[in-house]
Length: 258
Image (cartoon, rainbow, N blue to C red; front, side, top):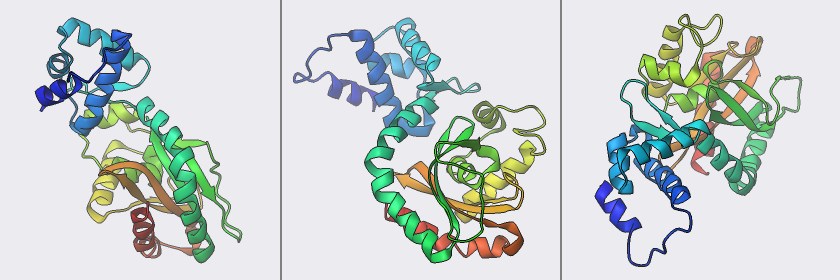
C-alpha cells in the first residue's frame, strides 16, 4: 500500500515542491490521515518518503513538537495528533458545523426543550463548538469555545469510545495520575464507561462533569472516523439513564444527516 501511495505522489504530472522539507511534512500528514488510527512506523514513513530514517525522524519530530503528530509509547507507531484535528475542525466548523449541525441541534433543542451541544476532541479536552440552550430553566455551565475534560463528559466519551484503548495509550491521551485522569474518576471506571459506550452506541455522563446535570452523546462520523459528537444535557433530578437512552435514536438520526 505504501509503495502505491509513494508512486502516486511521484507521478510524472506532480510538479516538484519548491520547499522539500515542507512537502515531506505535508506528505507525512497525508500518509497518516490515509492510514487512520493504526498509524505507521518510522520505517514505513521513511520508505514512503523515499528518505533515510534519520530524515523522516527529523520531519516527525517537528510535527510532534507542534502537536500535528503523536507517537504511541508502546508500539512506537505514529498517528495524527490533536492539533491536526483542531485545525481541520476549525475549518470544518466554518464550512459545515454551523451550516449543517447547528440548525439540526437547534430544532432538536426546541422539540425536546433540552440543552444540545456539538463538541470536538482536542487532546485531553472536549471543545464546545456549538450550544443551544433550552427554552426553560436548564442551566449548563458550558460555553461555545470552552473546554471540559473529555474523560468526564458524554461528548468526550462518545468520541473516545470509537477506538479501543489500552491503558498506556489512554493515559498518554488524557494525562492524569496513576489514580485516574481526574480527581474522583479512576482509570478502571473510565475504561468501563468507554466499553459500555462502544457496546451500546452512546455515552453517558451522570453528574460526573457538572453537579445536577446529566448528558447523553453520540459520535458524528465522517468517512467512518469521529469528527465530533452531539449531546443532550438535562437536569439529573428529573431524568435517569432510561430517559437519556430514549433520546439516542433522535441523536443518531441527527448525526446521520451530517
